[in-house]
Image (cartoon, rainbow, N blue to C red):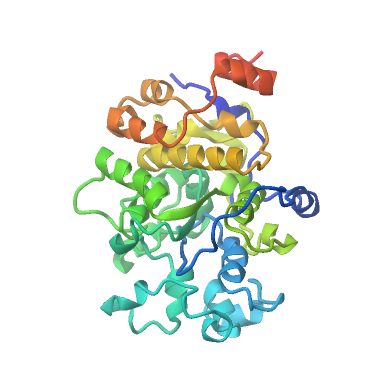
Length: 386
């Protein structure tokens, strides 16, 4: 039985590329709140750049860490990017080197102490990008920033390129020959990327033993202990607003732009829904992909996303960042996903959901009804929202 959950009734999504809103209008609404003081500026910052969660975040992170950068220091220099073989963040660091524009304690130095990484051309790249997993030494640092993305959206974004960062080359060659989205999503090493990177593993690596509930719990806990900021790709402009209200720094309209838009190469999923159990793609009722597909294809990242979403909503509430009502609709209950996908133990794990709900408990139905009657109707009866 296919259960239609809350976020199936949300805004139209962009299946490939970063989801961003109107630049001018969103920027104008994110003003400083009198009496709301940001935290002390982060020192020795690092960005856990999970693949396909938003390279554009570099336009926020680098100027924040190194405020001496000129206003022209932004991602998107195509000539420099070509010289650096498409490495967009490296291109920015070559053009505007950290040793010139950053204070000595601006960026984390723990990555450069790893012998295998000492020969990297640009050491600062290790703290700012590079798709490196979280180091154990940084697990309790609260010096990191990260964007987390809905698992199905991240998989759809990676499919046209058969993206699997860190996958061994021979295995990746086989992945390139996969001709269907479901084949890509189920290829060994492709799923669980966000969980793997939060627990110290490369995104595309096949683990020696299957990841389980305790790996999900560990990843969820690290969202709170390793990171000062957790954003949500689907709420890009709100995440950028939260970043500056929470951590300080000057915001700019360029931060809301998409410097690496994807190509709309997945016609089958942009107009269809995935019938995962029957290996078919069927016409969608509303053209959207959401929790059902995420839970079926990527259950570990689904529960990590739920924890990140709750943490994001709690901080938006505290720092008075206005969110669309649909944000609450993306929060799902353990009963709903466990009932729909009992074959995935992690979705029914008591330990996992206790870890998730320790982050933030969403408002009750009565409070929701006062905020938005449409939200309350969907929460009360997700299969028949009048």
